[in-house]
Image (cartoon, rainbow, N blue to C red):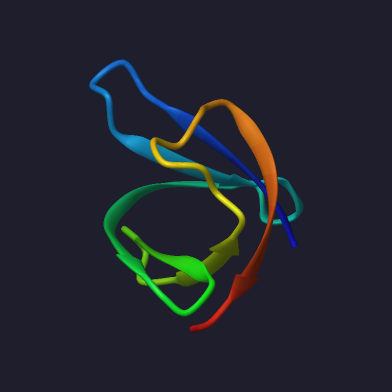
Amino acid sequence: MKVMLRTNAAGKLLVYVAKKDLEEEVVSQTAGDNAQIFTLSNGWELSIAGLSDPIKTPQTVDARRLS
């Protein structure tokens, strides 16, 4: 699914899922095999591959929902 990554005024990373009209804050971030795993404040886990470090925002990326 396509998601947009952006940072809010407080500097926190946000994920926006347009098809669900959902915007949630990233509460934890871990490195997986070839992707980064983001845990959102609603409990979703998203796997996003190919991100640079540090993450440049705003940007639209492909994500896979793990849970």
